[in-house]
Image 1: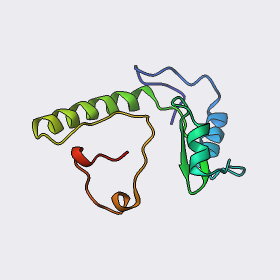
Image 2: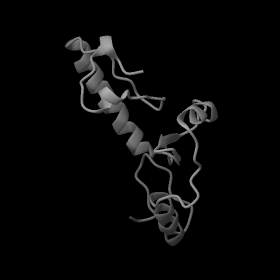
Image 3: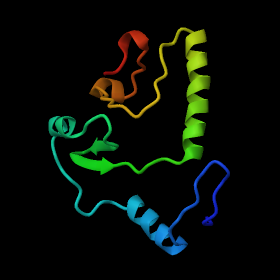
Image 4: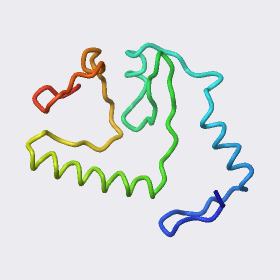
Length: 117
């Protein structure tokens, strides 16, 4: 990737070598990941915290690009229109806290009347 940007994105203002180092660090397994119970995670993370709880560890999410968000908005619009036309429930655009019950996470489909909480 070059340091140039697309018309919808701001240019990277850091040297390409440092950018690649930062991207590699963000993609790697955290060395000192914060560990806590799920209940502690729910108390710790507010609605603006971009993090996930995975196997007792907090995984911080990196910010998304403008291109990514434009694509997400388009897909949510298409999926939401389809869901409304076929009475399938709602399509929600994150980020928001989602908890999957064990039975649901193992492959059971959930319709709007049995929405995951």
